[in-house]
Length: 134
Image 1 (cartoon, rainbow, N blue to C red):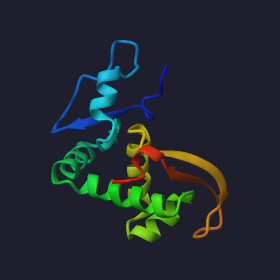
Image 2: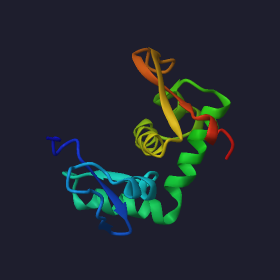
Image 3: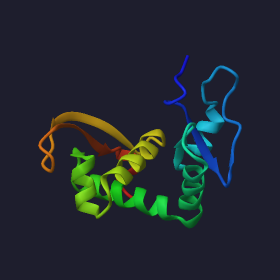
Image 4: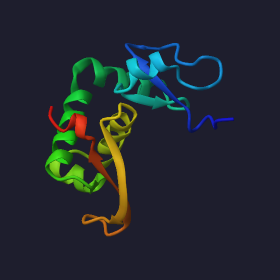
């Protein structure tokens, strides 16, 4: 059974969409349709759901995803903090968009190494070849 804190709801406008086939697994059609949409956790307040929807409607989330992919094409295997510093976003925002991009199969996780920003061992990311050109 999946923990409620780990479940995520996807945003389509201002309402949650039908995503599951009854087995708690995303259907293939839902995965394809919603892969790149901003998400909020089930236990997040309604303001988080509204913010995710607003971010998608305005195009901000997609612009940020494109900036992150472009940075990873230019310099693959960066940590989320390194990407944040390079593109001028807060690290938490980069982390959210990396999760969106990974679900959409536009980026993938790399090796763990020391981060050039914080010095801690951190996961690296790279753009997948089919999304290397925007």
